[in-house]
Image 1 (tube, rainbow, N blue to C red):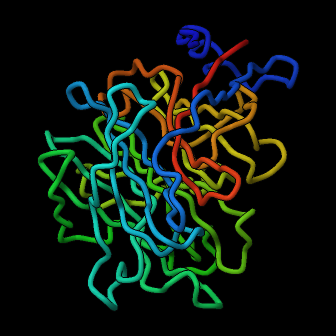
Image 2 (image 1 turned 135 degrees about the vertical axis):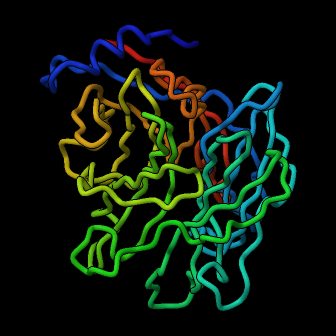
Amino acid sequence: MRIPLALLFGALAVLPAASAEELGTASVTRKDLSGIGQEKGVMRRDPSDIIKVGDLYYVWYSKGEISPGYDATVWYATSKDGVEWTEKGMALDKGEAGSWEGASVFTPNILVAEGRYWLFYTGTSRSFHKKPFNPDSKIGVAVSDSPDGPWERIADNPVLKNSDDPKRFDSHLVDDACLIVRDGKYWFYYKGRQQGKSPGQTQMGVAIADKPGGPYVKSEHNPVIPGNHEVLVWAQGKGVAAMIGTTGPKDIVNSVQYSEDGFNFTKTHNVKNGPWAGGAYRPEAFTDSGKGEPIQWGVEIGRAKGALPFIHRFDVEWSE
């Protein structure tokens, strides 16, 4: 079912950008659509990356009653095999009414550092269904000694804000945190959109901190990838790889991009049937080992006729 291609992918990743004929392919397959929660009137979406604690896999996600996902709270589930999942309950509720996170908390992701668990999440002060919707999204962190919680919001929240400069790529919103540890620092990849731009013009940036709770400083290289609506990043060897979905310029959509320095990315693979808002199992994401390998599986938003979004597994097959 899975092909161990760490050596192949590592070799491709350090080469200059290849021609279309030389690119490999990452093909995504879906064999089980049961997943987490096909439930009438309830959506589950925006899954985090996956961690393993003991013999259990953990994932966090947005849960709510409105399909677009901006009226939600953060829930979590566990699994012994990555296929059959058990929903455990709410991890994080909305913030106080009127606060930056009072209307919704969603799009979670996880960082394991300093012996603790750091739950990143996006918050808004306005509800999605109120038109016109102009998100004031910001990203916060809650921390716990256990993946099962309880979770405590850190005092310095929010740790990442949409830019005050309307010319910046992330002046309209920031969302979708994805964390890795490299060079002893915490690299926080995220998506941003500029004021006046459409969702199709969303781009990716990175912010870096010395501590898991920040302060996070946005890179002068931003945006580091000129597209992508779903942030799926992992440690690949001594560099960083990112899987790009269907949003962005034609030359980067449906691709895997690689960067030696974490800022300057080039295309190494085409992606076939890529995940929709996927989160992956990334065992080397927080080790700073320089031994990260291609992702092999994860979870994504599932779609079924007559059902609101739910969450199920995908697998990746890599080829030259």
